[in-house]
Length: 482
Image (tube, rainbow, N blue to C red):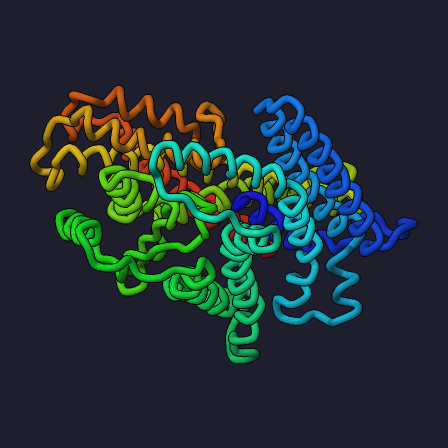
């Protein structure tokens, strides 16, 4: 969902750059197209979900649930494609601006609402399947003597899903978008050369983005409905873990999901506004040792500064791919015997932007998956008794099984196929196998740490190349202008 929403915002940017609609005089308005297409997509999911639900009542086959999950995933990406067509081909953002004006972040947010509504309706449609799956898991929990949570009703389920998957990304991105539109208004109108104005603008943008990332965590933990983890033996162990590894956070929080989600997260860049969040289902479904493993995984993300390095890798990818794409188009226009016509140039710019977006997302996924393995390795080192890297110890089977067991419980709680690979985390099976393979090794020789270290060096190299390409482009453009 995070990648999907990032792509949805990128589509708005591409549509604006291409001066959408790309194909004028289409027989349908953008609003009519997006409404009709969304009805078709979500209606199809609703019918297929109902059909599989009836089949599940007859034969109880689990593969019916997996089919619904696959259809729901396909529908989400189909809704993104509808959003892209509505914005780029039909000019949805342009239609909204014609009605409301170019309001700061408001017109873009309204253009995103059909996509958000469609995603919510998909969850509304598959709720009966989710409920039956949770009821089956509830019976197993009762048999095992584990605590159970009442499953929320349909509307609350969709609202919780929206808060977790949509608002958690939508609100920060909307704030960043608002700042990007405000920044030009803060640059002095006169008394500056074009180069100085660009420098002012870049500085204001960077400071604003840094401020948003640093200050927004208190808002995010409220979107997720959290409360402080109460004092007790577990809280003491988690506080001691932070002290041992010299990691400062503001608080450990319990994420109240009504037992729907079993998850954890580290939120925030600076320690006065940094939190580790553990869901209520995680705290009640896992053993204390497994909870400690999950918390150590999140502490590992903080200790290794993964969020910062992810941001650097994204910046480096955008600089390299965006600059190469721009230089390619400019070079062709300068040396081609038949220059691109305005419509063809629009298409070329759109392809270049899409190339940059897809390439950047691929880099994000590859770097993120490697950092997830390193966070697992950090948890393994902590559970094995390592106090600091200067005094390595031998990894233990008990530590590996604690972290692997926590991953398995997450998979079981959400009916995840452990071999299914995800964009940012890879497969649970691969992560479990890496943990168990590392048993008996010294904690300073773990493969995940070496791979993450190489990834950081590659990221630095990419950033240097990106800066060099950007400077070279500025020099070439200056010489051509002269």
